[in-house]
Length: 594
Image (tube, rainbow, N blue to C red; front, side, top):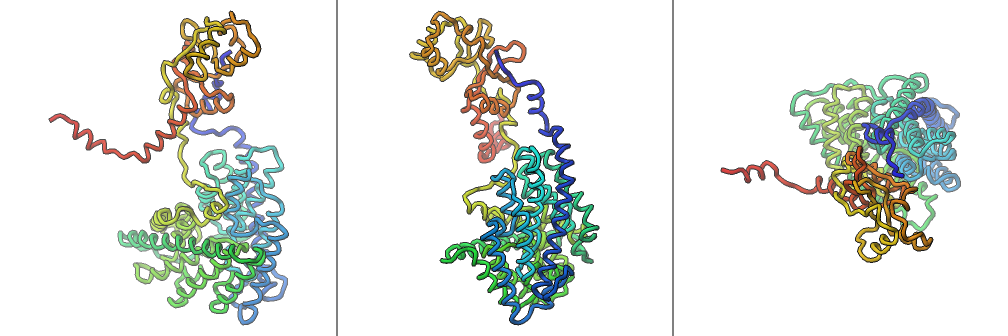
């Protein structure tokens, strides 16, 4: 019996997308994940406010306060130390996954952990981050909320019978929803999911993520507040000169992102060489945080007030330089020590500070160029150019600056990918022995049809050949491991292989029996010339048969065969298309007769 892919299977394989009705189910579940992400963001912000009030004002309150107003004297040295010791203990005896800024851990869970996060992480990550940030740690809330929102989505998904890919969709939906709730940037949250977390572009994941983000954004006015987080009255300079300035500033930001990433992992390596347990590293890092707080209290905590000041251009040049240098130092050492906190808010400050400094020499207000700096640094450090550009525009509500944000973001991205092999996010994962390629492309096997790869006019055996003759043929003259067996018109009976010959020899099958008779009950997968090579690859994996006969649709006449080796040609052809360089126009002109 010849077995071929069903019409519905092949039709689905040849469609533009792989979505099915389960996408509707995931979309409905994403509404819950989005609500959970919004709730997680609200809880995280309240925990940070509570920790800040306890550490710096000695009171139980969730009122927002600026710790820079209270950070002075001996307390600046002691309070970060207490918070870091608490985080170290939570990581040591709770879960090591709460260490770091959260996004690499989320990516690693998505790609290598079947998108399964634990309840322990969902509880400890926001709690440890709140303690770290509230005690003066120079971090933001975005990394923790991505991890927390992702854990909420993952835990919800684990309550149902879902595939790893479907769990990933709900994990990312929760993570993106949390980011949208914290910053009020729904479009940037969707793009972050696509550029950093999903590692695919499919309706099955895109639609649920969008619905989760929109759900979270709808909850935001009730839970956190409405409007842009850093609303600023900025004027966008027009003309070609600002565009060129944005491109040039982006290059500086790409270099800054590369420098920060390399410095971070040099510092992390230094901590790994210490002869003490990693539980104590955050306490050592907090000593530098305390000293930095003595020099400039504004470097402590998330520093959202600093972002406001940079956008309003209300800081003196000397204060901006101090903020840039001290914030970079305390953030890098604190994060390298393995404490819990995010990277985005510190990056916005550092990129905004550089943009503000350079902006004093560029057309327009320096606060505008601080916004371009924020777009560029996020793009260069996180390798998310579209997210960076739109994030800056949504944060400020200044959408007319989007073209210049894109210019700064893309040029920073270009410099970053040339200077750094990996981003600040993927470097941590690579150091654990897992390399990630952040480039999306269509599978070459799904682009190429079978007729482009198959071996035409393959060697065949006649169905009238006896088993005895076939045994002799394989012992003496066979050049392949298997052969199609056909009738007089070339129509396929099945495939006979060396393993069949050995089985017949062991079983002692009657030698006069023909191959057609012996294969009458066999199940043989076949494909057609216009089938995709990817479909045949799936057949090979599922059946374990390494050679698939290719037949005409109507006559079932064998016209070719496709092997595992043939499938590798597709990858080789795609690689050649990227590396082989020719000049077709010059070649055609040179060959044209005079």
